Length: 126
Image (cartoon, rainbow, N blue to C red; front, top):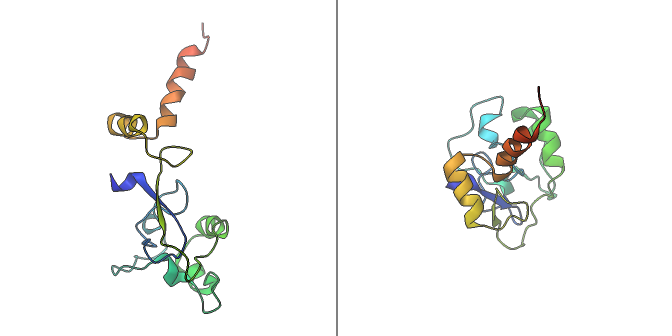
């Protein structure tokens, strides 16, 4: 169920840059980089420069433009802040519910995707 957990970045020291979900509902970065991710753990906080901003020089060499644009919407980790906070990815409020966990187990997808079938069955076709 690890794929169901997302991360709210605070200090960036607990969230794996490549393999954790920390950019909303996007896939993990390991599956969208231009080169093989480093097998050693690399935390989100490791992608900061000395002034506490994103290290864009480094990021631009390993990630495609669409992922870089997504990172711009995430506040850089704050040194001295609290630990990163785990979130439930399949609910808008990011709080675990048994309903969304059941939907994920049964359908292997987001709960909201099941709503598409309700819309399809309501379509009036000849």
